[in-house]
Amino acid sequence: MCVLPVRVGPRRWRQSCCHRGLPQCVQTRRAPLRPIGRSPGGGPPRTSGGVKLSGLRVVPIGRISGLLTATRDCGLIHVSSIGATGRRHLLEALRQARRAGTVVSFDPNVRTRLWSDLTELRTAMRAILDVTDIALPSFDDEAALWGDADPQSTLSRLEHAGVQEIVVKNGAGEVACSWSGRREILPTPRIDRVIDTTGAGDSFNAGYLAGRLVGLPMTQACHIGQQLAGIVIGHYGALTPVDALDHVRAVVQTPANISRAVHVHA
Image (cartoon, rainbow, N blue to C red):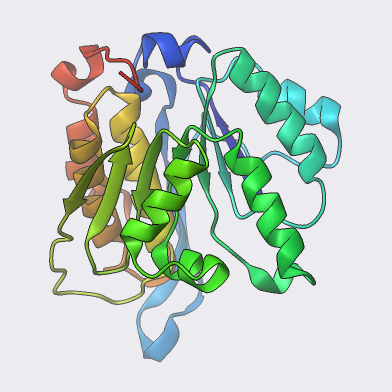
């Protein structure tokens, strides 16, 4: 389970939507690249490093006090891949954060091997959807766990669960979006150079949330997510050189985007 609190200005992001903007509040810095072994298929050595987000922290969930401290005064909390342990504390921390104005995003990132009982897994998923503002599922996961026939079925189920903003990723297929019940389908650009799809979903999430944090409309934020995922899958191990991200960074750091203030659910 991964919990990433992001401090993006005042915690009342739900009302003020990025008062200061992501580029001013989550600073990036270069980290040295160092080999960590050979890539699959005999490719070039894999490296660690690249972009580190100093505003992001992975939060342990074993103690409620630590969770409450870590998630206090956050504009956004992103949760990915819940496990069978610790979720009671997580749910309480998310409830308190939302009451204070924090937006919660959730990528189910289903890992059935972490659960001995799929019924319990489905129950846990329903519970966290109750405290979710932005859902970022992958269709293959949802089809396997819930039997969804297509991404539109996933949208319908999550809308029924009360989630206001939903983006269903579907690999190279179309992205299905829903915003307060209004739906849109976006084609995914063709990527000619695919080396390793590790981290494609997480990269889309990062680009999408970055776009939303600087006030971009849902469709434009989706385009940023697609661009970022397309860049990442062109490198081994989801480890992308910093300069490869310059174009995406420039989009979210455009002054017009930073200064735009729109309500996330307006």
